[in-house]
Image (cartoon, rainbow, N blue to C red; front, side):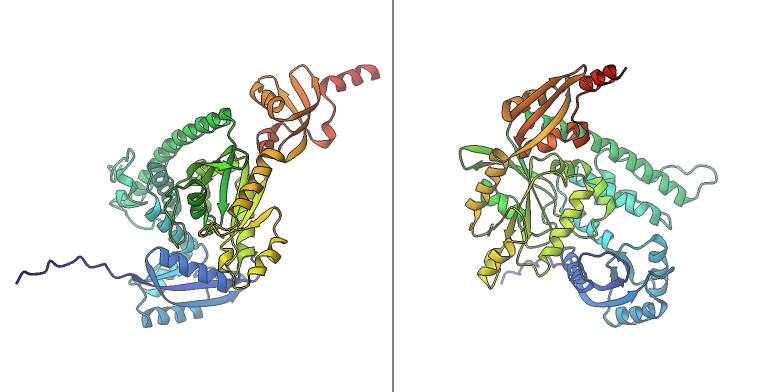
Length: 457
């Protein structure tokens, strides 16, 4: 009888204990319970099993251990009882907090925070060179102030990045009087500088690509929304694409652009972007600068909202705050209330629509409401005109031509360095003309102001 070939076994998942703190004066979008539920989903996405949670209400974090000494003892007992290998805090811990907590809990229990957990998920899901570099940069910048002992293999850090993309390799030679920690820090800073140069090349490429898209006159629509809202499912539906979809947080990181046919034989480029989340780590926002500019440079934002989520409004607000943070809040926006098919009360979707301007209830999975959504996008891109006055230098000839070609020109005034144009343009072009927009108290051209000054003299 032939022997069966042994099958590889899946390594057991780590056991994690969650800790959440309700700070009285903190401005939080989600309640503590909702935030911990989200943290549990993040842990599951990272491949960790949650075995318990602990909460505390404080006016301010404890100086040494974030939570109070009594709670630390309670946490230690619970972690040992549940055989937890890692404790995950829902807020970002300072290096001191992390160090003191690990000392108090014992060597067998690691302590990480929400930021480290998200960075780990990003490292697992980044597949392109750009995505890997962005995650590697964010991880190094997060870990640099947390170095407390010698690292002898930097290439194992940051999503496997040390051996990729022109790595400087392992630890260099130690100078006179230098500690290993100083050598490690110097090597990490060198690696950070190298990654930033590589990402500058990516940003330059994206700028050329965006300039080429503008010349094509095809408008761009950036899909934005809370993570797991259904953006990838929608772009697959609209463009008959095959973008990776999974029922987990941050399933896709790298932006994907597809052509979509709109009503009236018009075309638009739809870009699927990384999902947002409350308490999005600052390091990630900075590292993903080039990618997030895809949103800031779009003609229209299509905000996907998971209407079936218990805290859909809180997630909606979290996305608006992130858009403000990356400088994209001025771009026209329509809203797709996704997963409407999962509502027990179908009439609830109609009532909820009243709370969201320019919105449509849809099911990206089943295709319901998609035609209405495309009509709304079509109207915003090609039919909705906005009144505007701009002062354009003559060197911005492309924008001057664009205003005359696609806008409705009311009045033109020529001055020494450029031209002032008053009229209306499609809403999708507002972002391009925003830097040159005339403020209400600047309606006079410089030449008119000069004539007034001469008359007074």
